[in-house]
Length: 218
Image 1: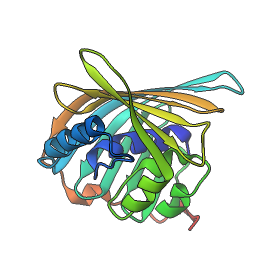
Image 2: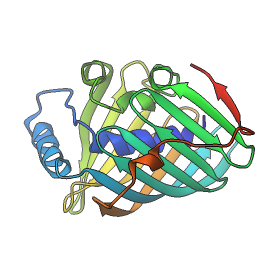
Image 3: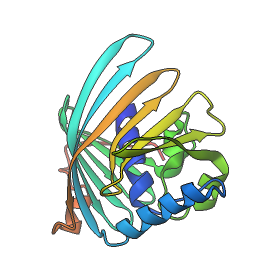
Image 4: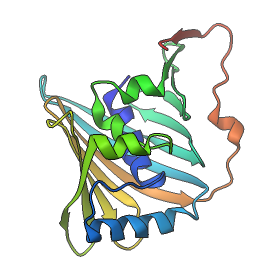
C-alpha cells in the first residue's frame, strides 16, 4: 500500500471522526471541543487534495492528487488522479485498493494497517479504537499563528514519526498536514471542501468485472 494513501486518510480522519485528547491540557481540550462542534454537522464531505512525497533513502519525489469523499460514520472513497489512477475504499473493517492500470484489487483488514509499521495509521479513529488511540499517541499543540493552530501527534511506539496538522482558526478544518519519519516526508494540502454534498452511498463500495484480479491479504 502506498504510504501517501495512508497518510492522507489518517490526517483527514483525525479531524473528521471522534476527536481525542491525550492529556488534560485545557487549551488542547478547548480546541478539540471546538472541532467536534463543527464536525457534528458534517454528514458527507468532498475534499480535493495534493500531496508532495519525498523518500529520504532514495531522494525520490512523488506528486499525488485526487479527491476524497466521506460518508458518515465511517465510509471513505478516494479517487487518485495522479501519478496513477487508483480507487481506494475504506470502512471500519477493510481497506480496498483498485489499481485501474493493472486491473488489480488488493483488500486488507483495517486492523492490519492499524498495527503495521507505518504507524501514522494509528491516529485514525472510526470510534471503536478511541481508547487504544489515547494510549498509543501523544497529542499536543506545537504552534500557532494568526491563521492556524498546529496539532502534533507522535505514536508512542514510533518516536521517529511525527505528524503536524494545521487547523484553520476560521473553519476548524485541517488545511495542511506534514508527516515526517526516518524514511519519508509527506506534505498534504487540502485544497477545497464541499460540506454535505449529495453523495450516493453505493459509490463507496467497489464493483468490478470478473476479469479483475482480486488479492485478499486478510
